[in-house]
Every structure is written in structure tokens, then in C-alpha cells.
Length: 516
Image 1 (cartoon, rainbow, N blue to C red):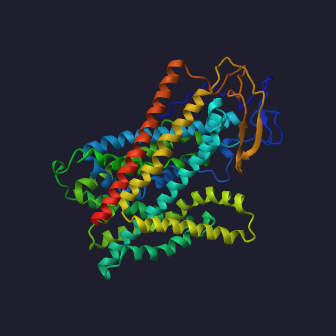
Image 2: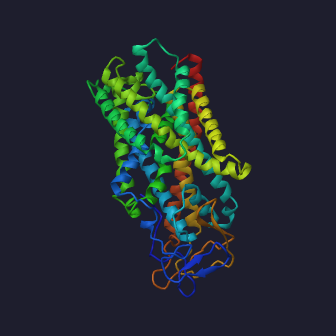
Image 3: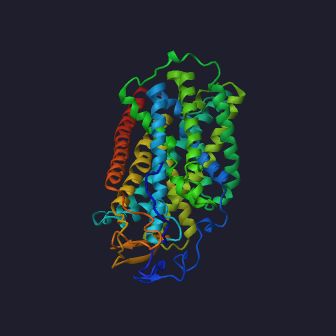
């Protein structure tokens, strides 16, 4: 689904003598390495061997599915209520194509940035965005650092938003089960109780210690989803009893926010590919990304259609909340899903910590008791997600709000921006120019890679054998790709503005009317 063109398979950089060039972290000049395939340190780097324990294709597919199956998928019935069966199905397929295409764009941009900078490892999301502007046209370079900060900001907002949603999801599902056997417990008090295990999981600084819980959570989520689909498919009413389109066009942004939230796995794309034994199998036409997201799309359509068809306008923010409250199996499903989501809290929480804590250390450190301060910082962030969840305990609307604010930007705005910067700065196949000035730092903010400063946009040259790997597009293809990227950005901007506005209006209305 990607549009970035590749021609030839030339080395990362070449000197006039066609020897591959290594960008040294200790100098501002390009130096030829002794032989092809050497990394920044002069050692041979094989992309397929750069991790200690590479994942197989099947393992990567499982990780991709797990990352996209959660509270967003369980909210698809509520999303379909806003758009109607037919319109929602069509728009879900459209958004699936758009979101997966953006993921392919991100993969291709990351690969091209590795090629341009000569890095041993493909850059991550923020690094790729920064590098695309840093090595792009002159007028874009001054915005590279700002773009990196924006990506990291939206990544933090998205992940912390997931954590807020998890508080509401777990508490509402557990509340239904407890109310069957005990006197009704207020949702806010229940969130306070759930805060304890959530806080404890967030204090775990090494992810390997929660790997066993993650495996159990995967099984619980799969079983819970299967049983939920079974309940939703029993004794279905006639399709004519449900709306085929939206009740009001003002409801469509709520659908868009929830659906993009459900598709928001773009943060997983580069880490999953980079951990694979054979990374090229990730984004190939019949690879992990297309295959996995096809399965995710079918599941979203299934849950959305069955949920709205079965429960109509009574569908709740999570389809699990519509399951029979007195049914033992339904209660087990709610507990299993709650456990799975609770175990996922620490995993989602790891991303903002990984982004924010190094900045805190850089600005205020070093600390005498580093671990203690990190635990206090983690505690503050958990309390922030808890307070936001307490303030807006409306699951469906909260999911739509998070999807509109941050998921649209990450999935639909940033990748096309990076692709535009790439295609605007590609050299012609006939060019044979080397940047006259280049300032190099050792890494991207402490991560493997290189950063180009004041370099000629065509920071790699043609080889005698294969030419540029990434060359300028034809005029027709350039404007076609450019128009496509602008369209994606406009779709993302529409979803961002309209979805955020509609979600906030609906939340205010829900509080005024006392709607759950």
C-alpha cells in the first residue's frame, strides 16, 4: 500500500571512488569505510541480526494483533451506533485502507532515513520524522526539532489517553460484576481501589517482569473477545430494525474518533519490524502488516456490526457491558477482559516514561536517588491518568476524544508530512553530488542513528552500478503522491477538529443530563 518508490540497491553513501561512506561521530567529514555493509562503528551490520532475540513472522503477527485488540475494538458497537450499519461499514473499510497506508508510509520513510543518514538501525517514529525534515528542503529543516517534539507529545498524549481509558474500562466492567453479589459501589470509589494494582504495575521498571502476565492477558483477551462475539451473534434482530446511516451528521466525528482509536497501532509498526528476523516480510504485499491489519479490520467490522445490530441504541461504550449481568459466563468475560486490560496498563505506560523521563533527567538531574525519583515521577503520571479518568468516566466518549485528539495526528497527519519532505528532497538519477558541509552527532537524543545538519538535500550520490536507491519521482508521479498526502492530512485534520469538538460537546451534554 506504500507509494514511496525505490530504484536500485546502492550502498548507504558512496564516495567519488564508489567506496561506501561511513559518517563518523567524531568528525564532520565523511570517511570511506573499508568495505560494503559496515555500520557507523566500522563493523558489519546485518539488519536481520541487529537484535539478540529476533521475532519470527508468526510472533510478530501475534504482537501486531494483540496491540490492536483491546478497548477500542470493544467500543466499535458504540461507533456503529453513531454512523449506522452501512455507512459505518464503508467508512471502516476506508479508514482501514488509509491507516494501513499511513503505516506503510512510516515504514518506508524510516527505511529511507536509515539510507540517507547511514544509520546502522532504522530510526523510530520521532527520529524518522525529524530526519525527514532535517535532510529535506532547506525551508523545512528549521522545523525538524519542533516536529520531533510534536510527535513525542502526541505519542505521550495517546498512550496516557489509553491509560485513562483503561481505568474507565476496568472499573465499569468490574462494577457490573460486583453489583450482582454486593451492594452497589460507586464507580469513583471503585476506580480508587483499582488505582492500587495499576500503580503497582506502573512501578515495574523492567518489562521482562510483566511478560508472564502479558501472556495470560493475551489469552484472556482472545477468549473474552470470542465469547463476546458469541453472545452478540445470538438471536439477531432484522437489519431493517437498525439505522443504515447516521442519525445526524454531527455524530459522524464520534464514529471517526472511536474507529481511528481502534486502528491506532502505528506506534507499534517500527518496533515490530525492527525486531523481526526478516524485516522485509513485515511490509511486503502479503506480509505481516497487511495480513494482520486485514484480520483487525474484519474483527472491527464483526464487533461493530454485531454489537449495534444486537443491542441497537442501547449499545454501551464497551460491548462487554451489554452482556447479561446475571450470566456466569458473561461475568467471567468481564473479569477476563478487565484483567487483560489491567495488565496492558504497564505496557502502554512504558512509552511516555521512555520519552519523558530522559528529558526530566537531562533538565533536573542527575539525582542522588535516581530510582526513587523515577518512581515518584511514575506515580505522578499514574495519578494524572487516574484524575482524568475520574473526571470523565464516560467510556465511549473518552475513547472518541482520545482518538480524535491524538490518534488522528499520529496515524493520518505526521506520516504524509514526512513523505512530502522525502519526495521534495530526492535527487535526480543523474546527479552526482556530495554534501559540502555536514555536521554529525553521535545519535538521536541518546538513540542509535545520526543526524544531518546543513547538508545538501541529496546527501547520497549515484553509483556506477545501481544508481540512487531513492530517486526523484517523475513530475506526474510527484504530484500524484503529493496530492494523496495532502488528502490524508486533510482527512486527519478534519477528524482532529470535528472529532475533538463533537466529543467535548457530547461529554458536556452527558454530564448535564446525567447519562452514563
